[in-house]
Image 1 (spheres, rainbow, N blue to C red):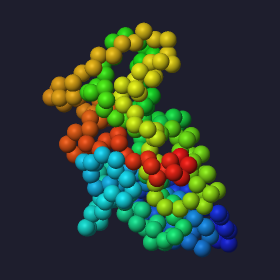
Image 2: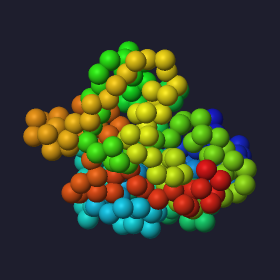
Image 3: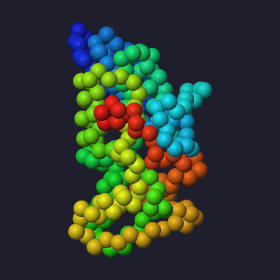
Image 4: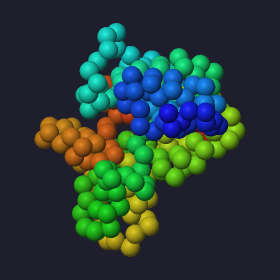
Length: 231
């Protein structure tokens, strides 16, 4: 009732995790909003077994509705949420699929671990192959781009990953060290050695995930469409 009779240029839905909730939001605003921007995730893809996954790669859409437990079914639920937005706003939707968002408000500290640890100095475990790719995006860059997309009337689906060129874990770590005065040194530890000792990529060693097996495409998601749209 509070929204009745009001009009907006656009809505940015940052918190849609469950399809029925997104459906309700989209339908409620259908006649009040010119464009629906939905913040999805790179987890919507069927797998990560190839390099340079772009926006046309198959999504993980289950044949039967999964439970609404977003902890267990995050990717499939987000994929279904995207479908709800497309159904209600077939020509006036913008869907953003970010990777890991860092910077202000990142309260999980996966990125923050590295500058803090490197600033402490000393010997630091550096995981895997120095050439292993990583992708992050700063919340401020992502937010500014989304607003600009609204102002420019840009529609479609976009991987919201960064940076625009390939970034290795070595460039990531040495780049951080380069802006500190810490006496930090890296000891590179083989991927298999870590996996054999039950060290969990991403969880135990933040940001890094070796590009092997079903995760071969990790850190290489295509940014071409987003960069062409101004990211």
